[in-house]
Figure (cartoon, rainbow, N blue to C red):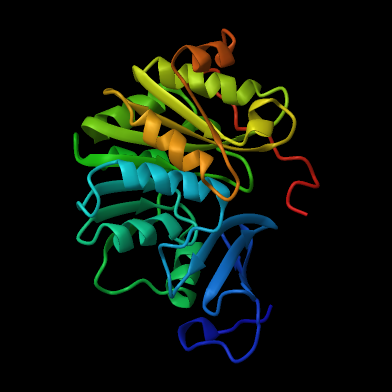
Length: 289
């Protein structure tokens, strides 16, 4: 497997970095349209995109939607305490650091070898307050002090599936413990027709949070294709109008469901507990082609 260190010096050649990590084969693919930008794939599944020159740039559709949540979590520029469950190439942690200087962030990324690769090839600004723990996401969440987090972001995939133990009411009990009153929980969910997993995850969140919103491409919500949906939850009313405006103005416009419409979308699905939890469905074979 070839390696390149050009990410740290400006690239003279367009070279892919490939390296075995705990989760499989990690590849850093150069972005031909952006000089110091890379896409991270693990076993062929896209995980992150990072522009070292512009960490505010979020290439992936679902990451832009999580970026909207970050933007609306507090007044512009105010530092946040953020927990990231799932790190990838640390795209969202870099975004928080760039848009909200002096924020303090904890990243929980189980794949220690992936963390080492990202730190080496896509180094963080030494001035940012980002701590990375290489443990299981739920184990790392347990170490977060009670009421510490303004925002908890769950973006955890083993391969292309969210592990079962990160889909339950018991898991969300730990999320709520870590959040301050009024803090936000945001999760990247992936599903396709008939959307049974997505509906179950909404019902699970509704069992623990009184306020929910879901942001997704309309074709995903109609069960026409496999894709991502961002679920946002809080114990206080959400900024639904502004979230709707931002989602609608995205390069790939999204729809926001909340209130009765979201309850109707759930279709009577039951909350998921640890005893009945299963991993999210695997994407169809041609999803990433």
